[in-house]
Amino acid sequence: MSIKTSIFGAILLLLFTVACGASPATSSTSPGTSITSPATAIATAQVAAILSASDQHYLSMFTTGTTALGTTQYPDGSAGVAAFNDPQSAASRFRDWRQSSKAEQDLSFMDAFKQADAFYTADNEPPAMASWRDDMNQAQADLIGWVQVAVKWQISQASSADLGAAAKTFTNDMTTAQKDATAVTGG
Image (tube, rainbow, N blue to C red; front, side, top):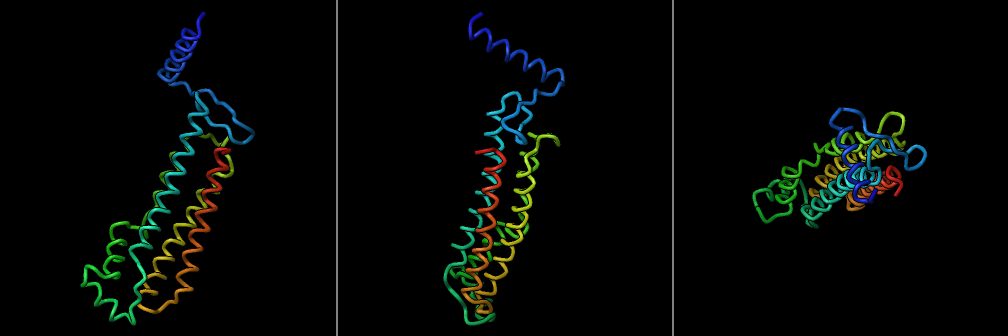
């Protein structure tokens, strides 16, 4: 039997198994990190892509937010409110970013978790999966905290040190989540 015939037979068997509603074979990549899939390497790559895309989404949102915030600090709340009327002002750019990004309501990491989690069973899900979800939840909370500090900073109610500390907290959380994602896929 040629290699082409063997591959074709394996593909037909897989398609038949899926069409009949049988569960795909479970393949183990290492203890505690097996993925339910007929093609484990492909599934691992998909899980890695899902988690990485979510991480990048939040990092990109934060980067866009810091750009929108800019470096202009107003002397007080009245000056900040007045700046909202100037579409070229940092106050209006940051307000627009908050409205368009919906950063304070963004829970898309939970959708990513559900997609990635679907590749596992209760018996083979790596512990890093739950750690990633928990760390992303914390990162989301700290992104909200950063936005709140940024608003206060803009109207001189928070210091630049406060703003820097809030940003560092968020980026540290994201670094932890990225390490979790790597641990999930063994990469």
